[in-house]
Length: 267
Image (cartoon, rainbow, N blue to C red):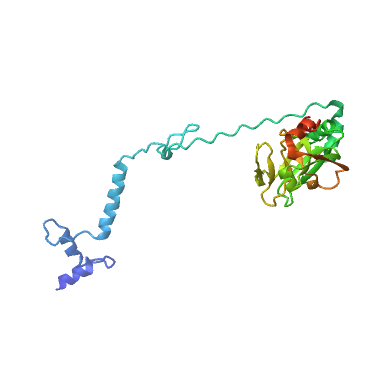
């Protein structure tokens, strides 16, 4: 008893005694112990991370092929399997515009004339040509009652009118003056015109489908021209009127005896 106390007193006080709980741990770690503890989750995790890092160092890296640069006009790979787009429509060939002729010293006068009349180059040329070719003539305008049919005609301001007494002209009071076809222009209403013919069917009695007015027609005496109704002309261009009776009831004889009516549709 005294010896154990002396042994305890001879040990240094600052040194801890071995705890009783460490003995079972040492016994558990000894080989052949049936009560060996399984490694804790922290120990397993720590060991797994270290093993993963070591395996990653040993594992060879995969080298992915780099994308090949596309050439000019080459489609991307995902579009290579798509059907080719349809070819673009062929653009229409533009109609070459006719350049105005060289007017020389008259260019300034010509441009001033165009601006004053508010005409295109073609319109100004037509006006001057009509004025020159139809010297002594005026441009009359007219049409039917409802306005669906409109026309213009170059003729004298002093009109020579025929009053025919054939079966149809007598019934519709078809007084008219005759002009060549080149001096007549239908401005509008071709779709609104219908035609009546009879007997020889040479005369084309045209009239408006809507209002029934015959403002012009193709006479039998002059199939290459037009017969214009003076009462269908707009006001302001007729200076005087001379009326000549024509015996259309005996048409063949009247045509033989008349000296000028056959040539009224000629230029």
